[in-house]
Every structure is written in structure tokens, then in C-alpha cells.
Length: 333
Image (tube, rainbow, N blue to C red; front, side, top):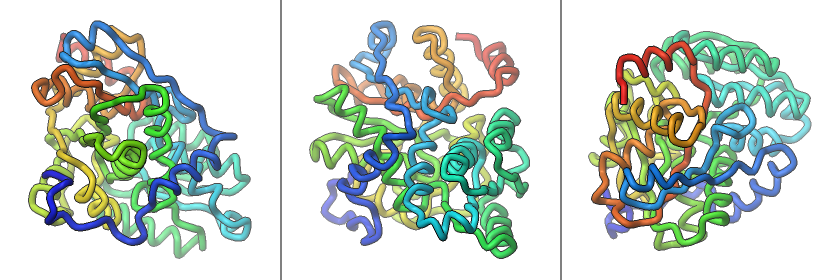
């Protein structure tokens, strides 16, 4: 799908704009890390292009999610914050929301699928949030979240279908483009679409000509198929080791992506694990499979990025080390 096609609809009126991302950057500056942008000559040679890794695995909470959660939580009025904050998450957003709520002095409740990785559940609880379990599908997440909101009277901060969250996520790309000017393209993982939406708005706000791509596992390809078919696909059950990429596009993020993203590139789990291993070995960085998907996409689509300067959002590093050992043993490089 080409975002520059004249038939592509505009983003919705409630979508954040570039100035919202600038405001979010100022709001979260006292709390969030300005993460490094790293390069690797060895990976450049493998990819046939110049790669710039925005290392959100080194963000507070171990993932980019802290940016959006922090912006949303600190956007709340004191009255709303006092009601308590509720979200749904497969892990990283839950931990980020719990940390942001603790910094704000608010209580937090996270609705999490029962198959959420233990390392991510431990982080959510360590930051002081309550956990309520649900089934992995989106319908169960929404149903249980509604029940928790009704029971607690809390305020919802959705993990991706929230303008404040999207604006916060876009601040990673603001930093990336300031550190690595002149990028030809930027690639971010896509799940619910909050990160990719914020990435696209920030990147094209700074440089309207830049190409924005999503990267998605084959076992959770609803974003790819939704953009290809021109309508949001829902109700699938994702099957991928990339546990951070199992959500489906939201009603807000889908039209943003339709209007701004050139293409969503697909990779299989083996390619994601191989890219994860490359980052561990060549860059000495601990990343989770979801965070390695952009590199996997470049390696799988070398011709599209040949000799270009490409920014990659390394979305997170919250990985179960026991699982990583199993993945590496099964899929040696």
C-alpha cells in the first residue's frame, strides 16, 4: 500500500499531529531516557545499507512503551489520576503504565493475557500495579478491561488507540532524526499501531519525503492484511514468538497508517530470532524478538533499502532469557 496514493483517506480528526509530539517530548523529558542511536558496520555490510538503531530496549521499563504511557499519565488532571489508571497489555505497556502511574502517585491495574511472559508480569508487579488476567484474544482483553473499569471507576489509558499514547511514542523518532539526520526511511514494528503511527507522524513532520515502513511477524499479520484490503481486520488469534506484536490495529491507528505508511513488511519467527541473535552478538544489546523485527525486515527485503540510510526502532529488550536460550539453540545463526 502506498501512502501517497491519492485514493488514500486522510487521518482522523482526533489523530495527533506533529506539534502534539513536540509537546509530548517536553512533557516526558523529566522522566524518560533519551536513548542512544547506535550503528554497526558488520550489520551494515549484511544489510547492504546504513542502519541506525534507536535503542528503546534501553528506555525505562525496557521498552518504548514508557514514552506513550508517561505522556498519557502526565496529561491527566489530578482528579482523573486520583481515580486510578487502567490498561490492557501483553507486557511492555503494562510495565510502562505501572511505572508512570507510580511516578504520578496513582494506582494502576493492568489487564494481561494469561500467556504474558513471566519477566513482563514481574515488572508490572514490581512497579506496584495490580494484574487481572484475560484470554489472549482482543475480545477478551476488551471485555475484562471494561469489567475492571466498571468495578474500579478508573481512567483508561489504552496501549495504542489513544492520541496521547501515540504522541508519546513518536518522541523516539524525534530523537532518532535529530541524531541521524538525512534518513531515507524509518522502520518500526507494528502491533496495535501506536508506535508506527507516532513514528510516521514524527518522521514526516520533520521530513515529508521520508519513507515509513512497518515490520510485522507472519503469525500476526493483521496490519499488513488490513492495509492491503483497505479495512481493519479483527478477531484473529496471533501465533508468533513476538509477544509484543500480537494485538490488532485500533480504530484510530488504522486510518493513520493508511494515510502515512508505505508498506508493512512481513518476516517469519525464524527470521526474527535470527535478527535478534545478530543484534545480541554483533552489537552486544539484549533485545526481544519484537524489537528485532525491523532488522529482520531489512535483511529480508534488501533490494528495497540498498545503499540507503535507514532508521530502525528497536522497540524493547524484555526477554525471558530461558526462552532466548531455547530459541538460539533451535535456530543457530
